[in-house]
Figure 1 (cartoon, rainbow, N blue to C red):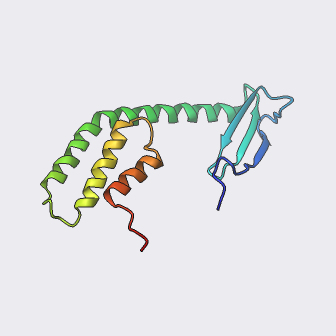
Figure 2: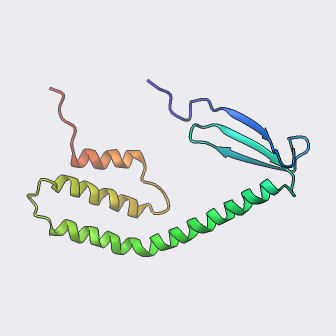
Length: 138
């Protein structure tokens, strides 16, 4: 059995900025990034560092883009959700895809109820178990 991600150790790297040569003793600003592999990278900068300025500009642009995408999604989701329900209602009830359609509708509704967050794995499992009950191991 493998450890959960919370129990797995992470690697910590400290990097001195190549532009301003700041380190923990001389830097004003510390940036921290956590990679998919749970590696923590710590970089130090001075306030006037060009690399830090670029990082800040890119971060602010990324945050603005996410806000725009969220606003568009919040506006568009209700109509897309309704189209999904309409398409599902148009399918014959005895269609072989009926359990898949029911599970999809339930999963999309669970996500609609949790906008701003992802539906947690236990919810996914409960929905899938309801629509595709586990088989008896006999």
